[in-house]
Image 1 (cartoon, protein in one colour):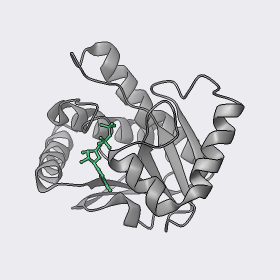
Image 2 (cartoon, rainbow, N blue to C red):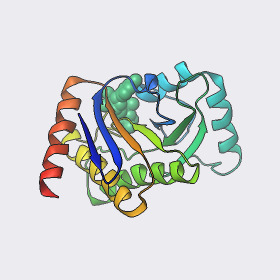
Image 3 (spheres, rainbow, N blue to C red):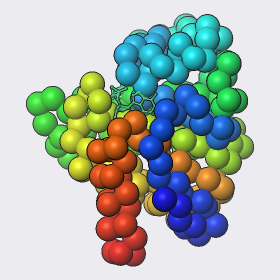
Length: 186
Ligand code: ADP
């Protein structure tokens, strides 16, 4: 589905984020920033070694101890259609998804958008951060994802298009339902 919110196009779709042609795609990375499973593995394998090279430089300079949860950094998109990858780390929701974790998930979305803005990126695609291996419940995580994006648009109206790219039918349906509920509340 598509919706125009204050001049920003919001798209909710099912797909593989490594195929998206937005200027940037977001990676649900881990704090090592050196690749991993899930969407992270797919991005590094399709984007090629140039992404890892830049991640290594980030580890050698600004984040020697790893990327803190909720922060975001940018690298090239390598061989991907997207010119850039914005790597962020969501919280791990085992054993629980408490207020602190919710704030960290919000930070992951917010700081990804902030990094996009700083780099004059006007279109961005998000996966469902933390709802895979990191086990955050997608029913609640989707609400945070959508609300944070809308809040960012309210405050920093700049981005022209934001896509939520969901890997499964189930996730797609949950996001779509959640988005409609949030729009009804506005
Ligand atoms: P996390 O560790 O943050 O939970 P995961 O990569 O394990 O990250 O999962 C995050 C979400 O990304 C999950 O919903 C998973 O199904 C989804 N996912 C995995 N591969 C892709 C892909 N190629 N494109 C979009 N989403 C993906």
